[in-house]
Amino acid sequence: MREHIVLFATTFLLTLAAIFILIPVANKIGLVDKPHGRKQHVGSIPLIGGISIFSGVALTLSWFGLPMDTHWYYLLCGGAIVILGVFDDFLDLSVKLRLCAQVIIALVMMYGLQLYVGNLGNLIGTGDLKLGYIGIPFTVVAVIAAINAFNMIDGIDGLAGMLSGVSFVSLTLMMGVGGQLEHAVLPMVLVFAIIPYLLFNLDLVGKGKGKIFMGDAGSMLIGLSVIWLLIVGSQSDSASFRPVTALWVIAIPLMDMVAIMIRRVRKGQSPFMADREHLHHIFLRLGLNSRQSLVVITSLASMLATIGVVGEYLLVPDGVMLLLFLLMFAIYSLSLQYIWRITRFIKRYKAKNRAK
Image (cartoon, rainbow, N blue to C red; front, side, top):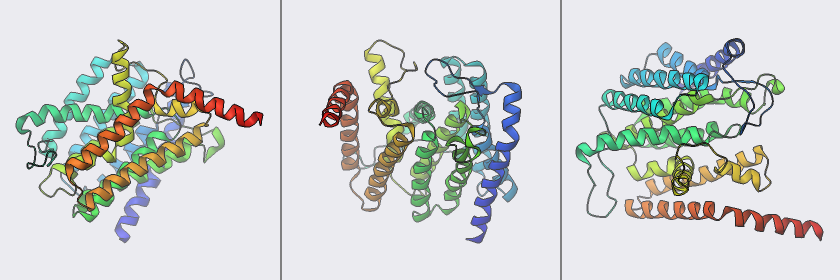
């Protein structure tokens, strides 16, 4: 226990040090986010959250000795995705180039883990649904989906960090209870690396002068880390949870991404086109401020993750958990489809109450 406390404290302090070192560097080289178009923040904000998080994690794992051989591959893939994100933050890379790089990283990840999503669990009540070698391209798609889900959800202060925290804490709990104790170290290391970022991103320290953003490097690193742990936790010989539970662990980012992409395709738009129709934008239009939206969305994510964890330990049948998830997604999608009517109704209701 004492060793873990030292490990996590070291991660926190190293990430904090990285932030202080990188803020002036980012300002000097122009690695900053300037307000324009959809971006309504004030001033140029350093995009060093992802680099700082990765630095804290990489230095901690290297300093204490990597608990698992696969962590070398994690650092390799994580470093690659951070570099890709930094170039994207600087140059705004094309979608095709980003996807090609993500495919390569996914393949390296599978080689390093010697794992891929080959078993979807007992979803239809006739035994485990095995994918065989189809699982390799399926895993590539899953990796790209996770990376871009957290990248797309990163739209208001603290959101990607808080939602990833929900996922990592859930994974730590299930891996710890399920006997994957060595693997359970990594998600908690990530949590303690994210905390310093949140302190600066949410203006809890520095009073605005030290504000930083995660950048594409950070959101993509988080997505990669989450899918890495989900595959380890659900597909290895010592799996600590079922594949269907993975859906609940990343429910909000996943549902938001899929619903928005379906909506864009129906409109004849690119599924990767940026817009202001994500869940956090909807809450902002309903009259909540950024901090209130963060609390509500994080609470929703925590509730859904809790359903997944509880369902896992009560051994609720896989098929039931999948149908329940699809029901939640259907409700979510319908809410997005009719959100303008819902928004107008709520605004009219508020106006009537104020008039009274």
